[in-house]
Amino acid sequence: MVTISLAQLQERLGSDLQSDGGGRPARRDLTGVHISELDDPTPYLGGGELLLTTGIPVAGTDEHVRRYVRRLVDHGVAALGLGLGAGTDHVPPHLADACREAGLALLIVPDGTPFLQVSRAYWDLVGRTEQADFAANLGLQTSLARAATRPGAAASVVKALAEALGGWAAYLPADGTPESLWPPTETRVLPKLREETARLNLAGTHAAATFPLLGTDVVEYSIVAGRRTAGFLAVGAGRALRPSDRQLMLTGCMLLSITAQQDWELRRANALLGATAATLLLHGYIDAARLAAAELGLPPLTERVRVLAVTGEQVDLLTTEELADAVAAMAALSTGEDAAELRRSIRRSSLRCTLDGLSYLVLDESNAGADGPAAPGPTATGPAAMGPAAIGKTAQSGSGPGLPAEGGPGRFAAAVSGPVLLGQVAGSVPEVGRACRRASPGQLVRVENVLDPRAEAWVDALTGYTRADLVETVRCYLRHRGQWETTARDLQLHRNSLRHRIEIASRLIGEDLDDPDVAANLWLALRGVTAHPSLLRTNSTEILL
Image (cartoon, rainbow, N blue to C red; front, side, top):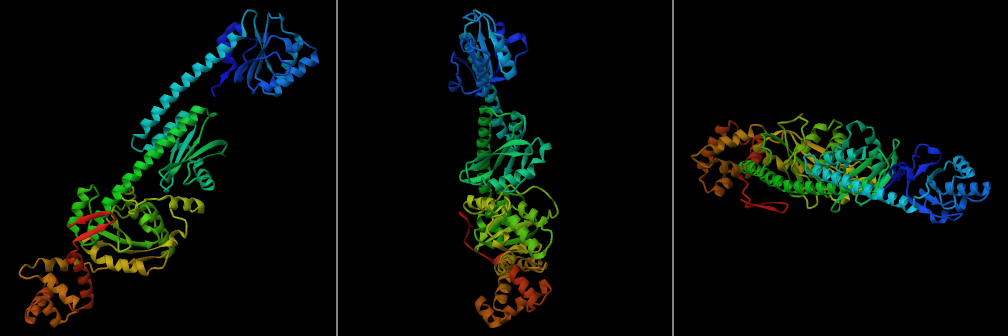
């Protein structure tokens, strides 16, 4: 409701509405103008009015007048206006004394000024104020809409809201990423705001709440995109809120919801793109993976990486950020070490896919120690990245916005390889996968030295020999565990020809193929270049090779 002050009304009417005794206008807000000649008009008043009378109710004794004034004050009447000239030519002294004692503003409407003129002046001010508020609100709505189109839309919307309301505003993402706050000097509110948000448990609902916080009344809204909670918008206004202010906050909520939905759609699309390149890489198609990454706009593949495998209930529904928090928690529990770098490495990864029931990520080792931003690509590779169930459980348990609640990291098990070259990724996948399946819930297993660093050079040496297919010869020899007759029959070679080729292969790599360590590492390395599936599947994306 638009509020008009008594001072505004007096200024508008000038000499047609003056304070008794010619004093300064009273600083009181009016809710309306009402005319009554009843001894007790309060049943027809809501409080805050300017009550106009020709003096009939105040024509009695001093005690009668005092009771009349007291009833008005007790009911919240803002001011009493006495109209002169209709039976009352001057202000009765006992009325002036009663109003002064009770603290009720007494105004004079001079003879010849109709009460209708006072009412019209009030409603004209209301109309003008409403138009001005509408114009101002329209400008603020436009500013909010423009803010939502800028980079860092959430931060821009928060800033626009805080400046419009003369206070502070904050947006708390549900995935645990950093909050947006304006002005930045109000960081003191964030810890208490996080606690209050967790206590109110607004996740998954189109709900709002108000509560006191460090001496300020705070309004908080849940930001829901579709059926998922994206975050929470909290506003501490620097003044009493008007209806137009609440409409402005609702507009901010709508814009943040749209922004979150767009961001989720982009992340889901990027997740499918990253899964394509990751699946190619895990199957040993390095050149194809490089080409796919370049064509899909993903970061270039680096030479040194680590392979991470995670298993657990609905692990494919976790965002990459949630997965990073879960694995880091497991690392801290399993080894007691600071897992901050592992968390950052997972968050930066844009290569994630599901293979044989495990969620795999390829982690970049070239930027180890760098604290750059998370990759803009994949979140979850399942059909519903960051679904409402995970967020709802998080809020119910108070475990923080990043981790699913039930069991926390104990719901999952993981294994991670040591640094390997891209050519060794496919060979490391089986060992990392087996270690992951053997791991206990809540445990992170480190699989160091999955392959001998020389294994890739051995494969290159065999591949570079053009006079015979040494790659297939050695692969078959290792598969049959060095049995000459079985290998020669499988390759349709004479046993002496097979012996000659194996001698050449041993000479090229400088190692004995019957050495168990050499045979194991070379076998794993060769698997990465000899796998020939005709169709690889990653989620709903199919890649025909």
